[in-house]
Image (cartoon, rainbow, N blue to C red; front, side):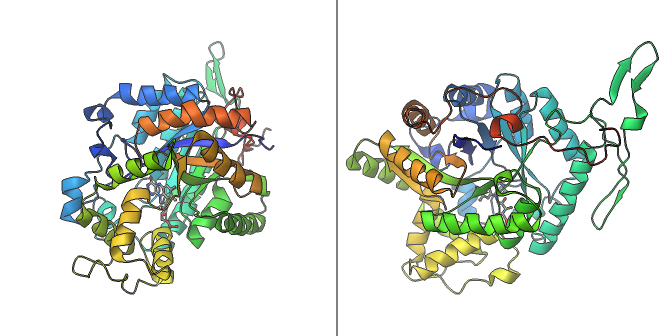
Length: 445
Ligand SMILES: Cc1cc2nc3c(=O)[nH]c(=O)nc-3n(C[C@H](O)[C@H](O)[C@H](O)COP(=O)(O)O)c2cc1C
């Protein structure tokens, strides 16, 4: 099943926007980031523009290796499943994508949480499966430093197998609620999973019946080789980062080859690259917006961010010189997508100061600044070239940039027949053109 329209998801990296220091922006929200009403208004805005999903990022630690981070960028946030459960009650069509770490949680708990969110939202739950790569996260779960890269992905792969089996542990139609006979469930349709693997031993069954979508939509976002394999094996949506059309086309080709190896069709995995859309009517306005954001970032913090992307302390290295030798990707245990991006910057001979500025201001995603027509042109070109199925929209400042996008760019995309003007009925899988997975444990189909 293919969709003729782009899939559009609004990504919330920080509650105040995607720019690292968006909280300092004069029009950014303040204490209301811990209040439901703020998110309720963002969700209503998303539904008014028929966006497909809200995607809430997460980490299970404060980013505090460097003192400057704690002081200036306290990345405090609400826990996403809790937040999205509340939003499920005040939205109708929006997909609810929650990040949850497969490195620091147990499959039984997580299978329950997403099954519950899927029931409460009538089939709109999605799980962004991440393999946490920050040392700070490991330190909250009994470790000193992050788990070895291959180990994280091996664990995540088994984790997903267990979670899917738990979702399958109730066949459709297993709930009888037959007062007369006294049968709550048809025991022939409820299965123990008896999983005994390298990382997990889980008996099952789950104590929540099969989610409306069968499996909530599975999202994956790491672009290392291991990350792409996890996506090709298990995911329905893949968030990618690419900086040019050529890079995006090569990326799609690579993922298609991996999908083939797992016996999957190319259109069964939807690819959504991140972009940062910023509506501006003139070059002067674009410059003004860019300079305002840049002025919010303490330089030290930018450099510390680069340090954390490669796990090399750059605090005493000259900022106007090149990046030092970077770790070998094959043996690096941090986030390899980030390291690869730094290597590309190094090849372009950027100085540490320039890289710091680039990371703090636009991260790895391209900034697409311009009029509604110019932003739509960019998106149309990538979409029609076939490198993606839609976009992960990373608004630098919330709610302002998102509101501009919904009010100006969405109508332009709709006029061009590229964005939906109403929601399809059904679950998130139905809306995205993804099939409902069959039940691997079903003996009664
Ligand atoms: C668009 C995007 C969003 C991501 N969001 C999160 C997140 O919210 N939390 C997190 O721990 N990791 C996040 N990641 C990191 C990845 O999911 C992945 O775990 C990480 O990149 C390490 O994998 P790698 O070595 O394959 O790059 C994100 C990555 C991308 C590209």
